[in-house]
Length: 119
Length: 404
Picture 1 (cartoon, rainbow over the protein chains, first blue to last red):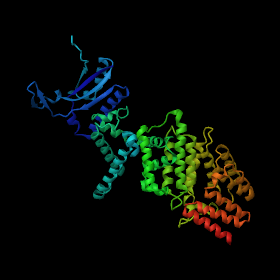
Picture 2: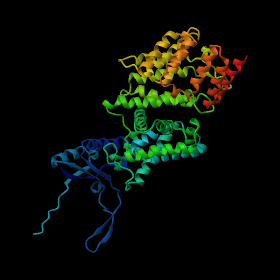
Picture 3: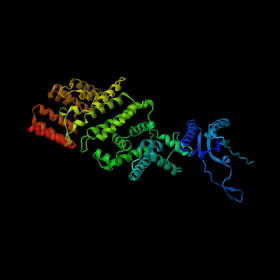
Picture 4: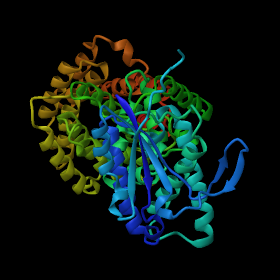
């Protein structure tokens, strides 16, 4: 069993939140999607991220404000799941409700085991 | 509310659950006093309770007190799904099942009957500690201790409120039925309380039994039979006491006051209870109650039939109390002498000594056998034994009648 990190970008959360009904329906899809993963024992964790943040850079540890990038490029949240193959993780990602929006995308990355290269 | 919130926080955190419910009601009192009652008070209460539950979850994210690792609750740990999951837990159609699950948790076989009933009243019927104490004529302290012990048990065992598996359901339902039966008896004939009948307790028993008859897993013949029994007995509530709270005995009751619709309902449940070959004590007690309810007058009561039922009852569940009741039917059917014989034939007579009814019946028999001296003694013992003011009064009147 391997772990995969799914990174969510884009989507139109702000627009959706204008209408409570639409928002509720959309969030229900997230609950259904994650609920299925839970039932299959594939769910590890997931959280949305706030839009604001700061970045610390290099050895000088300089702090800069925000990711300041376009909304659709910003990571909006993550999910970690456990499945056997990369393809299985891709299949899961395809079900992500963020893909209801043209601007939405999901990046799938396997969590790597660090090699112990001492020799 | 308690049932739903227990699903969220687990029985081990009943304390948290009760805090949320209490806070919700405090909010309601404050807000409603200012703004008036909302159009849909129940929805309002649920919404506030939901939000409070979400707050508690967020505040305690890193606490080990709450365990959300199991499948049903893990989605409460993600902000993506917390609100939606919480919302979905409060769906109307689920709440009845939640109450049933909670009932099974309250009636865990390792919890004593007393503690089961106390917990049911507290968590499912919303009685306060003071009200429970009043219903059982015991101190609030005792009730608190009982509740504490049960909660401690939940904490240690992390009992999940769930409907038992198919092979367990019959036995576990029997425990629940027994608890509801005792609860109903307490309401029907309050052993301790000032007033003899506690309609609120009876109503709660009716509601709980109704839940069992609505769920496909607990729709056992016994459940229907208990429901029928409760309906029949409840139908006579209005005629059992005078306006002043004095007892009116069955022969003197105004049968026109009996609630026909409840008797009809009881009949329907009786029919439902008749499938399968199960004959439980509830079936027989319901059948006896049916005979009483449908007899046009006391004189026309079918004592023969009732005696048959009592014989069966004593056969499947030979308790001294059942035999005592049977003696009454014998008295009506065959006379006082035969009844006395049947009383004397009870094996475990000693167990009946603490019951006022035993002495009261002996008094009645002695009256009928023209032995007023003895009758008076029996009635006096009976007075000593009952704690109900209404019963004491009735027994005193019997003594007065002896002297005339």
